[in-house]
Length: 481
Image 1 (cartoon, rainbow, N blue to C red):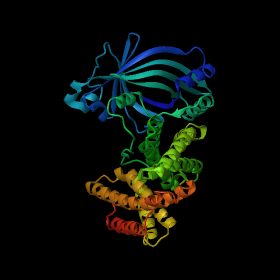
Image 2 (image 1 turned 180 degrees about the vertical axis):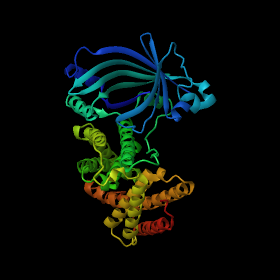
Image 3 (image 1 turned 45 degrees about the vertical axis):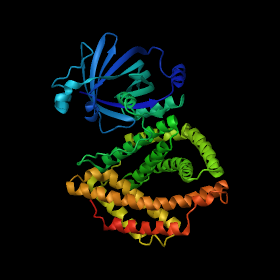
Image 4 (image 1 turned 60 degrees about the vertical axis):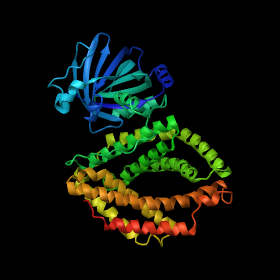
């Protein structure tokens, strides 16, 4: 078994040609054609176990590889492998691999499910005590009649500091646009099999019970980056409002993570926080039009909103394709890889559960203090309470796995549900305020149909009462920490 540390970058096939023409890498690259067949059961028991199984053929040589997902799932991949030579296209699964133990009798149902066909070019970059293997893969994934292209660069550290991976990535980025890669080849194949997804929601974060605060921060940020990049790709492919919404949620969760962990990271992440704020605003401007369009009655005003929305999407795609937006996720991954966050008092080394308990209690107290008179507050004050509720909800989800006793888990679910209730009601009130601002900015106030998008006094009073009730329900709900 061996551990890999890789940085994955995605680019277009045309940009791959430009990179090759730049002479950044020598002309003596080793080039091979490879076909990798991936195996699983009909109900994907291998993938559900957190593993992938493949046999890769290079000429007459066949190598069987089982990979287990490590704690890092974003940008920097750290995985454990079981690898061996085989004589045929049938997997050899015995006690030296984890599959028989993890799958039991289901191991006999394993069969081919998709192929990955690539042309692979490989270089070794040796500089100043650092050795990096560079692999350029171009090809496709095939699952039955379904195909998906592949064009990606993998930088694998063989010797030296992981910072060298980012130095080389910057040199590549100076030549051609690249994006942080978060999808493995096996994931590309599995994504061809089920019905296409419109968006990707945040997955449950499983933090190790004995993990440190620094470990928790890395896990949480990696999960947020993955959610954003998956939805960003879907957004480019489908232009679906659901993908935009989940991309925006991922950025909000990232910003909350940087805020929650500020006692540990201090001002080290301030520049990244400002970039995330800028990106959130870009996504938010378009999301506001999506929400307004979803509430607009048919007619001339709706057509104007729809046209403005399309223009906003075009502008957003230009922003996301630009250097500034593309660099954000790579910069955050570099920040994770190179920072230590352990001050002289050992803050980052303290148990994550202890840190989580302190943070959750502090955020709850803030909402209790600020939200006592929601109905009588002004819009800005209610918006502040909404942001606090959102941050407490994200923190409750981030740290939920650290409170694993049955009673804690039951209370955690009820607590998050109560938070969602308050957040939803405050969100509806905020949407009405935002709707007026958006319509004023576009000159739509006073047009036919505009009144339907603005709150009546009676409707607003009802929403305020519901928000008050949700506040009371939250503080009637027992804490889980």
